[in-house]
Length: 375
Ligand SMILES: Cc1ncc(COP(=O)(O)O)c(C=O)c1O
Image (cartoon, rainbow, N blue to C red; front, side, top):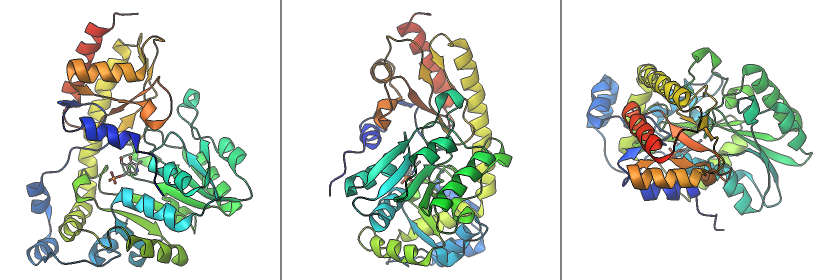
């Protein structure tokens, strides 16, 4: 079994550490290690001092799983499985799907969310959000895709790459439809917690539907991607057993130092989220200004959550790939064209979770002004 190359990750591998200016990162700035350790409470400092570098518990450090469970209404510490987020997507699809299964998946999406199922030999129906309705993941489109043999519905909300977040009524319709069809809901909630209006936060899928699985982690919301710690919240015991058994073929257990660092991050989660939301809001104000000044070239749907958005290029003669290539080659600014998501050549992804966004955006505006005349 060999999946297609992961286009976005290959692109990041090429440019993320060579391009001087990043305008498409999906995470918040990585937290300095010293700052994380300084935030630790007495218990965490004790765990850190006493840490040995042996194997750890396969499901994850018990204190970490207890802290993760507090993020949910109905999920207990023993209903949590930790691992690297990307690893957990792989594990879930391999453990829970079989060749010939029908799967509905949000599209465009973080590639592994549909790619692994396709590689297994599942039939994947793409559920495309409606751009003209603010990238709405329309429940009617899901309903039209569901079949009696649909095994799994994969949703990513808040959504990478559009920044869309279903309104509560749509979310209730979506979870209701999946439950009524008896399909399993797999919800990638990697950006949950970064809602610009905190009142718009949706119930986690694992709480909303009994057999559903929620994926989340430290990478985006907490600025701790380097820990490689994420988790699945799974109330269904049988599914949990299959997932745990599959992890024996990937990492077996998580990194011991990372588990303690993630525990510290979660115990300080409210402060970290407040900081990251304030930064996102400041950066969105800068993007508001840019898109207003360059309304001749771009239009965008202002995101409702997360750290990314997917503006559209208006000029027919400028392709997203060409813009991204010129931008990185001539100005050292990395942008991700939507072709990396298999969408089209008309959109580019912009990330606004980083402290230096206003400076990089200013540079990008200067590049655009020099490269493309006003239309
Ligand atoms: C929607 C989504 N899911 C999963 C992941 C994987 O997270 P990680 O890179 O921490 O493994 C990403 C990373 O970009 C993502 O955007």
